[in-house]
Length: 93
Image (cartoon, rainbow, N blue to C red):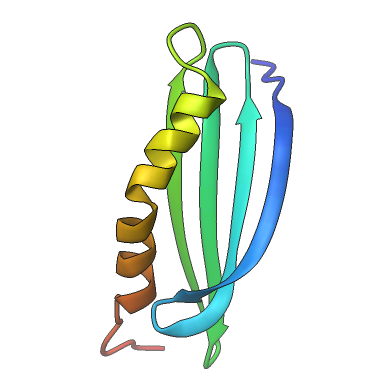
């Protein structure tokens, strides 16, 4: 199965991830059927990698990037608050 995707934009910013300093990258892309916005959160601390992903998608025939950005904006504060304040306890290496 050949999946061709067109990338509209990429962005990277600093962010708090699981109470640690890290980065948030945003990727806007589409394929033949869907439009997608993906936010990836990364941080490393004490030899561990902390990672979270939030993906917003919609059918290409029923929506556009403007509506998808609106949905992402609506949930932005909640998602950022959850990802920045979540804590991990008792990690066994």
